[in-house]
Image (cartoon, rainbow, N blue to C red; front, side, top):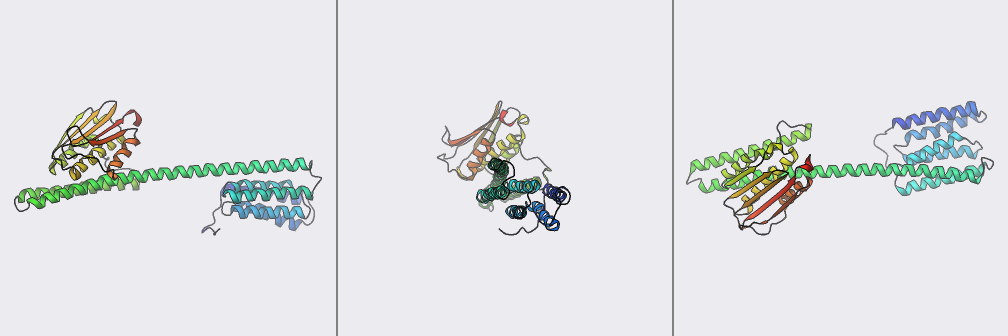
Length: 360
């Protein structure tokens, strides 16, 4: 086990260590005075001081405490306070170490208890008292193991939340950057074809490319601002901005007919963002893959948000890439569903249904 780069002390453990040191000194000098007082003082301070190092060196501190406690016992000085410091060290050690080393520590504790009652056979009721103390050590060890399980569970939950957040950010980046880049590539291709025959239209296409790039940079800036400060200068897009999105695609050469039945303002922000991204991804796929000449986007808002995007392209079975997986994950996050495949008119169809109650 390597040494920690910076020794860390826990306030509670330092406080327990100081309290143990005071009680042991009271025992040495007041409750049970007698020679060798100086040696007993030093050893008891080692036993108490070891408790302060349990965070940095759980097993090492437990061993040092045990050697000090049972060393005093070996030379003939029984003490209630000494054993309690070892019991505390056992509980903390069990809450910090893997099962193998922790169990080894418990067995050493049992050996120490057995040694104590062999050294002082007249203490308590002999075997019965020894069994009781061992049962107490076992209970303390189990408490420590339970604490370790809770700590690990909390860490796993934190890791799971972090993974979910990374997935969400990856979806956002894919939606922002993928949409913008695909749109710019299509626009650049259109501009290249008409550059000589229609310079004015080519200039408009170049302007559209610049506008798309600026919009993508603004979206990225808002996301980075949310990550760095937890707030956003401008809200992320919602279903209320679908008209602008569809107009952007229409300007790129893919006519989009949008109909919205219901009030987008009553849709919770998270569901509204998910719906916007679903439409954005579906339109991007239609522009990039479907060879479509027109697209229809229908949004119905009642108890659910139903989104249907259909094109007149070649249809067919979809390849489940990052974009389609992102659609499914966004909908599932809010208790919704996504279906896609060949539509009734032969083109490609994406349909999503997200319940509003799941987001409230």
